[in-house]
Length: 377
Image 1: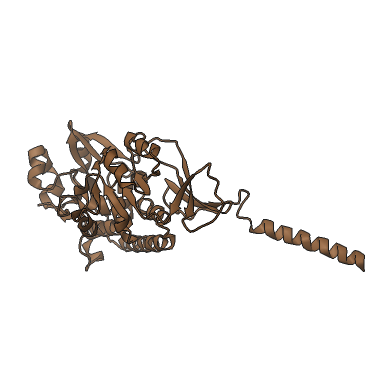
Image 2: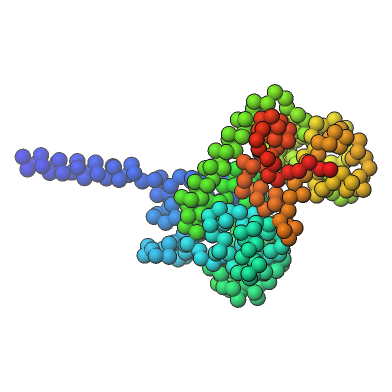
C-alpha cells in the first residue's frame, strides 16, 4: 500500500509538471503579439515583463530597440540592463502631428508639455493648450531646441527621424530623458498606421482603451470596404502631380495610398507597379496612361485649378480636369494653417476610405459628408 502511495505521488508530481509546461506561453515564456497590421512595433510579455519593441526607426534602419514597461506602482524585479519606461507617462513631448490624434483619443493631451513647430497642429483641443502656454514651442520639426526641452524635463520624448538617428534626440537621451522613436509613417497599410495608437496605449497605461479604439476603427474600415464592393462600376483613378523638375510623383502600386484605392474598389491605373513609396514619372508617360481617368485624387500640394494651370497648362488636357473631378485634401485646415489630413488621416483610415467611396460612388454613402477632401474649383 505504501508503495502504491509513493508511485501515485510521483505520478501526481509528473502530471503537475506537465501541466505547468503546457501553460508556458512558448519556449521563451513569451506571449504572442496582439499587433495585427503594424510592422514597425510590437508589444509582448516575456519572463513576466511587458516589453515594447520598436522594429523600425527610420527608412532602411535595421536597429531594433526594446523597452521594459514598468508600472510606477509596481514592485516587480526588473532587469535594469535593459531600457525601462515607467508608466503611466504623465509628462511627454511628441514631435509629429500624427501623434496628436492618438494622444487625444486616449484623453491624454494634457500630458503633452512640448511640441516642435506647433502651428502645424490643427486639433482644437490641443491648440487650446498651446494658446495658454501649457504646451511649449520646442523648435522646428527637424531642429529641436534642446535647451527648452531639457528645461521641461519630460518623462519621455517620442521622436521620429526620416533617414538617420536625430542628433537632437541623441543629445536628449544622453541627458537622461528617455527617447522612443515612433515610425508610424513607415507603415505600408492604412490599418498598420492606425494601430500605432496601441503604442501610446502602452505608454499611458491605457492598453484596453487603445485596443477598443483601434477595434472600432478597424470595424468601420472593414464595413466601408464591404460597402465599396457593392459598386456597379470601378472608376479609373489618377493621382499626384509634377512637384519639381518636370517629374510627376504618384503612389506606387504597393503603397498605403494605393491600398486605399484598392479597398475602395477602384481601378487605380498604376496598381500593378512595384514599390511601397512613390513613382517618379515623366508628364508624357502619365498623360498617355491617365488622360482619360475618371477621377484625379490628391493632386500634390495644389489646391485650385488656377494653381495647376500656372504650374503647367497641359493639366487642362486631362479628362478629370475638364469634368471637374479633381479632389484635394489641402483645403481643410486648422486655424493656424495646418492641413487636417496630414494630422488625422493616419489615425482615421476609416474616414479616408469613406471619403474616397463618397467621391467616386456617392450613392453608396448617401448621408456621408466628406471629412478630408474637397472638390477642386
